[in-house]
Length: 275
Image 1 (cartoon, rainbow, N blue to C red):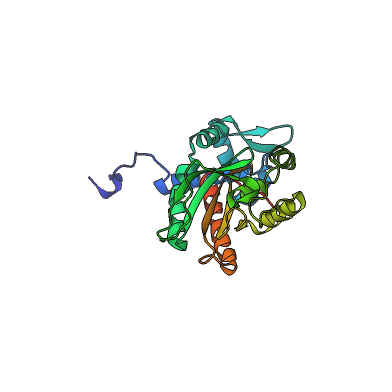
Image 2: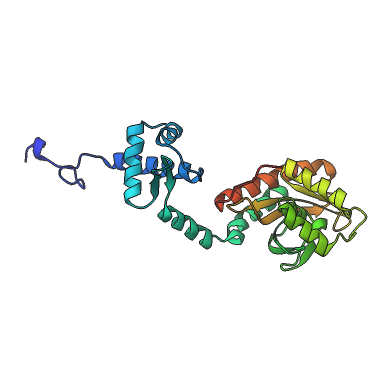
């Protein structure tokens, strides 16, 4: 067989596009979906092409292909493109299948390896924080929380990290129903003190528990958010004041905050802007 009549193995005759070409189109199409999903109101063709750094003709061709499969739809009245029902279904199937406890466990173990302290994960159950997962410190003197145990929201790092991002009406409901028990002399036990503390948590991205739940114990915590920016859970690092003095709280707080942001991203969540 002459060289001119040979075919590349695995490539059908008459195929005018390479595998890399197909991959490039796929990546570009997914990029368009990602940008449309971030704009619920839709985007005009010119806006989408500019954001994706593509020619309008290329963008239109990809949108038509996505539309034919039910992933996007064009609003003829407004002249914009939006995600369609199939994209929505795929997103929902991901949200239903996510396991935030399982996803968080490797990050908790990493925090313990990085800090030498116990790392916890907890959720809110009305006016209390409930601890669901833990990575124990290897230190002889360490903080251990029994899984399933509870702590007041306003008097724990995990609890305050969760409270800080609650909608105002939900926060008011929790405060009116649960009250502010003075657990230790350091507990934020007045509405004004607590609100000031929650505002600071939103600004810096993490909560600090300075012997507010137990004397001799310091803790830092940060919130994991769902796709709407609502608190889903919170992670923390806790240990004795002797190993976590005030000067170390800011360092650990930044580490826990960044780790919580990683988990949020893995779960398809969104970190809200401080208010």
